[in-house]
Image 1 (cartoon, rainbow, N blue to C red):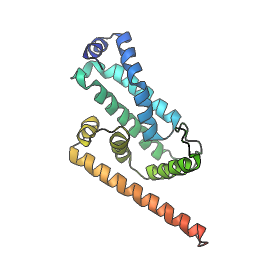
Image 2: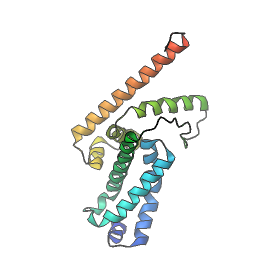
Image 3: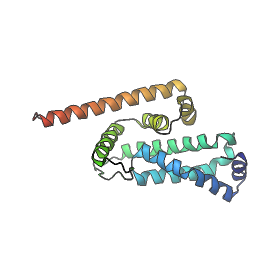
Image 4: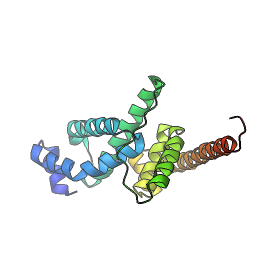
Length: 186
């Protein structure tokens, strides 16, 4: 992002902010969807992020860090939505997790997507944020830590625990499927 554009937006230039938001919207949408796995909630998180960014932009100390700051706001908005949903959880199964990219081997893609979805459900919001920023957005761990404003060691432990929990959940699902296929009671 251009420093000049950020500076103009900080001073209240709506057009400059619209240009900044327009340049970042697709990355924000993708990141929010990866963290929340629900298009409507992802759109809410992005909208909340952009509203907060406009409101808090004058307090941004380093205009060169605008993109990282925006991702931190988004990660926090997603974490807040996940926590709120866990407090108000209903036992409703959502079967449509669109939009997923179309893959040539659609049967295995659906199976992989469902398997990852089950693994993601077992993660704490902070672990999910670190995994998405690191593995899906390819941010190095020091940048993930800076984006989430957590110590590097905390980011590493969230990543380690999150991946360990996902593996355990996926292994448990695989054992359950194997038992069902072999006719053992689940």
